Image (cartoon, one colour):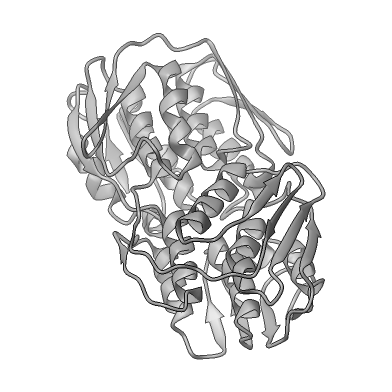
Length: 401
C-alpha cells in the first residue's frame, strides 16, 4: 500500500467507524451462554469477530483462530464451561503467545486441558470435564483477557466463581467493560480491589447494540494532529457513556491540538492549534491499544516521548514495542526500550527509504498510516492485516484526500 501526502492538509470528512470487536466478541460469548436467544445489532464485521462467530457455531473438534488472541482466551474458558472436547490452534504467532495463566486457573477448578506442542502455549486440547471448584487465584498483571474470559463463564458455573488477584491489574478498562456487559445482561457481582465474586445465576436475554470502536477512532485523531488548523473529522457511532476505556483518547489528543465535541450521532473532532508539548509522557497501562498510535503521533510532534505501562504489548499480535522501535528508526528517530517503557527522541526526521513492516499486526499498519501527512509518500507492507479489526480502513483514508 502506497500512501501519498494529500494536496491539502485542511480536511473536512465524515467516517463511519467500525463496531467494536472487543464488545462484539463479549456479546457473542454471552449470547452463546444465554438460555434464551437475543439479537445483537451492529455486530463487528472484523476478522476477529467472524472467527469468534464461526468458532461458536463450529461442531468440529479443531478450531483455528489464526491471530485472534481474544478468541483463544475466551473460547478456552467457554469450551470448558460448556463441557466440550475441542482443540484450539492458531497462527505461528499465536503459538508464541502464552496461555498458561488461564489454563492453570481453569485446571485449579477441575478443568482438564493438554498442551499439544509447547508447554504453556497453544495449541491446546480441551477435555470435556466437570468443574467442581469455585475459587481461582491468578496474577492480573499479564493480560486482562484471562480475567474477562473467566468472568464471562462465571455465572453458569455450578458454584459460581470467586477470582482473587495476586497482583495489580493491567488493562483494567477491559475488565470494567466485561463487568458492565455482565450487568447489562442481568448478572450481579461483588467487587473489591483484590477480587471479584459472581454467584451461580443466569444471563437475561436482552437486545444489544454494539457501539463504534474508540481504538479505531484513535487513528483519525492522529491524522488530524498532523493536519492544518481548522481541519475537522466527524466520527460516527461513538458514545460519551462508552463501555470502552479507549474513550480516553479524546483527552490525550488535547495535547496535540485536537478537540472533541459530542454530537447526536457520534463526535466531531477539530484541529484547533499547533501547541504540542516538547515532551510527551503517558502511562498506557489502562489503554494499551492506544500506545502505538500515540507513539507515532508524539514521535513526530514532540522532541521527546516517554510511553509507560507497555508490559502487555509484547504478547500481542506482534512484539509491539520492538516493532515500533524498528519502524521509527526508519525515519531517523532514536529509541530506548525496556520491558515496560519506550522512549523516543526526535532530533530530526528523515523520509523513509524502505517500506514500513506491519508484522501481521493490524495496529502497526494503522498507526503508521498517518505518517502520509508528514512525508510525500510512504509504503506499508501487507496492508490486508487491517481486516482483523477495521476492514474498510484504507477506503476510509480516501475520504480525507
